[in-house]
View 1 (cartoon, one colour):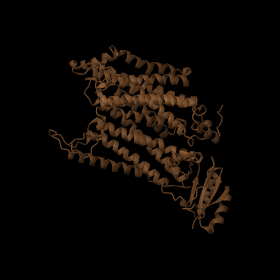
View 2 (cartoon, chains in turn purple, red):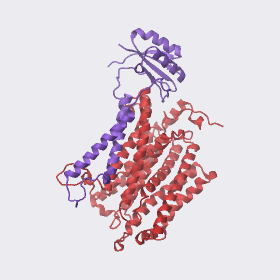
View 3 (cartoon, chains in turn orange, green):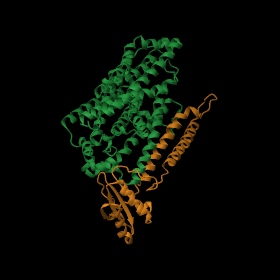
View 4 (tube, helix red, strand yellow):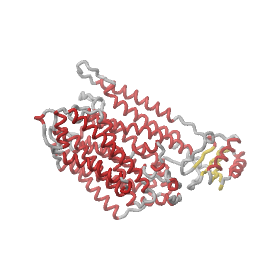
Length: 171
Length: 436
């Protein structure tokens, strides 16, 4: 069973040092989570969170584009009218509709992907979250019971204040 | 000398203070605005009951104040999303206290503007006939109609703008949820989606906001282009112009900025946010406004010069009515308030202040409303077929609905500013003042 420890840092550099030490001791990015009340920028390689959001957004836009082209084509042909030889489905004059729905696809995919990637709705509610004070960076570490003492030591050596063991919430 | 650094706790307290309690003045103002808005709804109800004939629109002027208001409010909506998106993409640090106030304007202006196609419909209860669903009436939805373009463009823009407003509010409502009780607690918790402030969440939010800024920028430009194409696709005098789309986009940003400056000044005064919305912010917005005023003049001049030089009789009928005929008072008022006054008040550095920027902005809003009136009414009054020409005067129903939209906008804004911090707390870093 996993345990959780949290330590708070007043300086970003201390938090970076702690993350690097944990990584050197075999902890992966999934074991380490930084909490703060404002976004913290780390240098590349410290605690990278790879993202496929851009790719997902482009894919979402393409899917919506194909869907709307198909929909308009189907609808225009479903209600046939006499057009005097003009095409029933004409691509370019419908371009605005295609463009807007494509962008709607991009907007909705961005939102959906943000919710997915941030883990907001799929987070395990029993995993404890440390209370964050303003202007303080908290590092939460997931470890096994055997590594608890060494993890606490690593946090304290890096300069963490108030190192606490977080208790899992009842499901 | 550098301005003092505001500690984080004070930032939070200052920005959360307006959310607590409701003053007598607030209740009175909101009640008045709600009453005027309600009067607008009554007028609309009367129009629905009696028919569209109670409005002043008659052949040949079948687009009157409703279309003027539609274009005006869609233009105002460019205040937030477009300005905020540009400033986010360019990482302009001074934008931070301004963005939420601007994004809220967009959302509410779009809600109001988006209602006008419905208000303008003769039989509004049949609006769903526009939707392309299988039916037994053999309706043939024409996707090539600019009306259909409007529907898709405004729906996409409204969806995007609401999300663009909502996403950066999540960290703030999560913090508010920790201190709220009762229905506010439930509202904030629901909106926070369980935000905990982890690096995963921050990274995802920052990526999403960057992407959304790019997307929304493209959508915003397209929306006002589509509104312009509603006109320029018609072979009507002074409408059939290739520069109408950029002309409308520039006008929209221009009026949007003016609306934003007025809103920010009211917020600053009523919520005592003088330390957050500083002369520095208004100075930057005023410079942008001046730039847009010059661009507006350039487009207006280019548009009128080509018509005048071409000397096509039907076009010149409308041109003459605008510049020296029966619409000339409106035309020259527009030029004065959109260019002359802003140029003097904002162009001369000594005169540029929060007050003068607000005065110029009020004038610009009037001027841009007149501009839309001058685009729509003279052309329809003087169509290509001279025998079909006519006059237009708005009825009390149209005037009531127009006035009600302004009060509805103010009421929505008042309610919003009581529920959420009008300046983003998490984005307003304590060292911000120092950097200025």
